[in-house]
Length: 531
Image (cartoon, rainbow, N blue to C red; front, side, top):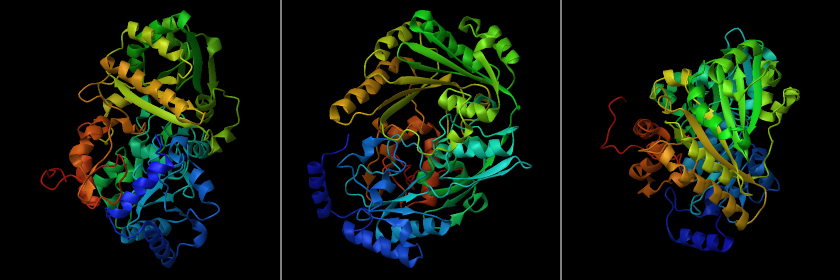
């Protein structure tokens, strides 16, 4: 919850009595020095906005998708640097270090907990490095590769790939307004993951500004850092400006269906059976579920025609009752519109809409399910789904290619042993504390009710579904506490968390790039044998 302005003023007064973690200058002095440094480095004034600038509020809100973090009283950036070229990003990092202003980079997509543009610490002096201008997507059909800027959306990537070839695709998420930078740096799963793995599994190279302000690629950054940014949350290690992607082959015609079954149409039994069926289906087929109100919606993508899809459904899940009338044959690029907008007839240009739904408040949590949740638990869930404040549940099955990749191949560890990811998602449009508390309580209490049925020791979650309820960083001296960060870090990264912290200690030992859930540097005493 955002602090009230009165409380914030008291906290700011306390901040003025204590030294900052990276500088002692006043906030206004730090901002002036930071802006002066950027100007001296050749960043044109039109790319810099401060709270006194007429366009500051509009730029700050331009890609905010969770209004909880622009509420009155939320600490705001001292400046926004709308970088237009790599040198601007390099200058922002160098000037930030020099003048005690931390840099939070945002690619302009979803950010459940606002970590790319807001701080929960009223003492922190920070600037937002906005990467929206880094949105070029260049497709090389002959090599089946593409370069995409971090500021591009998934929809812009899909559109460019689809325009270049009907036989190539990129395996990433369902929502087209998700930003490439955040999606790839957290792993990124979607409808092709059972055939081709995560988005991050298909990253071939990247261009990154490190904590020294250097511009690095895969060769110059080294394999340890390249490993870390493909699923470990890139904002902890630097600012990734662009990504080289492996494109994957798809048939010119794919098959999709969406069938809805209500609670009175055996939805509980179908979901119960789905839990074991979906992860074991052929890897060319994904069958996900969205539970909302009093129904379950089963959504499928098959890399083939309807005849093949129906054969698989009759063989593996006849009780769902899918018929030829339910199935559509479309191109892969049309399927990205289908899953985003529930229609294959909508124009592909919708993929280029970067704005989408922005005027909403959001709270989400996630789980991994390793054993089927019993039917009686699903039956009891309906009472939660019929509440006026209810959100929705999204069930994405794993298996296939996901299960064949080592959990340590990238920081994303949730490969083997997980049947599916379960997301609890609530959004609302009403302003005010009462509406917010009611909606957030729905998510949190249902999450608590599901505890007996999900992963344990630790109870895990997906880092791209950021959840500050899992824990937040605390400082020890001038850096983030590794011991405290493990509380949330091992829930996202399991055994990979220690290696991530070792990479952090190697590339950013002073902990310049940090936020409420950034990777801390591994204490020197612990060491790490593989680095």
